[in-house]
Image (cartoon, rainbow, N blue to C red; front, side, top):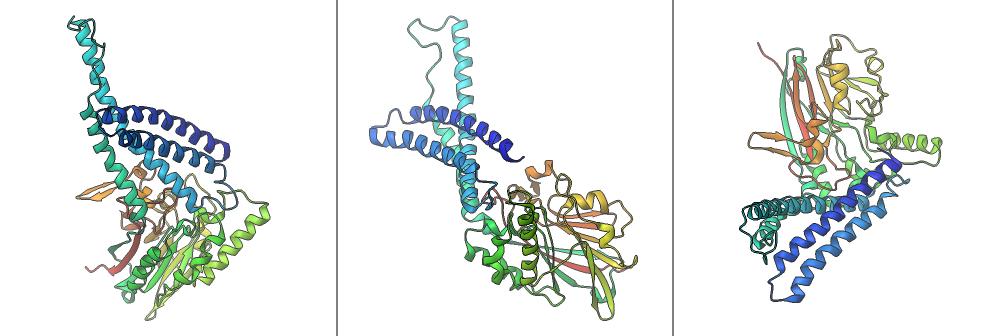
Length: 420
């Protein structure tokens, strides 16, 4: 969704939330109607309305600049996040309150039909205060959760470890470790010191190989520049390798000219080199250990519904058919469409892209995120006849300036030789 279509969508969304403001406003009036303090009552009722409407208005004013040359900045992301926080909180409040109002409606109809209503009584009973109290208590859960996600959750880095066994893995690479980061989205960071904790955690893994699987920026090359000294701290004995993701091509903002867009991509490629990353653009390299080799293959972005310029046959040129192959491909739908059932003999594919929607549940045996309705494979390890895909949940964040339940990830994979 681009340009005017995006604006219309959010304009309708905003109109709905303003109607919700009116309903919540009336619910708060019921909640506070018997308060002794009139100033306190006014602060709660009118304070909510002013803040909620202000968030909606400021958010709408910011939409028009989403596709400017700077794209979505941390300011835009915070306004979107606050807007969503208030929207979800109000939605929960409205649902609870409307259930109570529906009960009043049914009671009023039944009471009138039964002839039990006195002439001087209202047709519907008054809204009960305890319904508004319950609505506030339940709505406080998403409100507090969203603020935690925005303040702490997006920098609550987790290390996910997986050991994967292969028949074809060369003996010399038994126990070989790979640290993977994906979806840094450097244009979204608003706390460099908090972000540095994630970098330090990645460094502490001391893996044999470091790979980055795309979306270094939100849109523009300048976004990574202030963090080059930080991310370049990550080193590995067998090198640091990277690929491009869909956001790295600058397709989601407006440029002065096609040349400006092309220059931006060229600049971003140079930044990969400044980070110490070998950028793989539909190509491969051999990694050698004790005279044995594995092939590392990297393609440009190819994704269902996104830019599709990655050329896997080109990237495989010169690779021995019998070689152990690790593919870096940003979008997991590429694995689903071109790798999983095709005779490429790629043993392991490393992807990112989905972010796990930055929201979901992975606890107590429950694993759910709304992104599952868009992506078949959206996080973690997938095995299809001993051909593996690992989807990293992302290091950074985009649009919603937070993470809840799906925390930012540093992946550490250990390759093991399967024994008979």
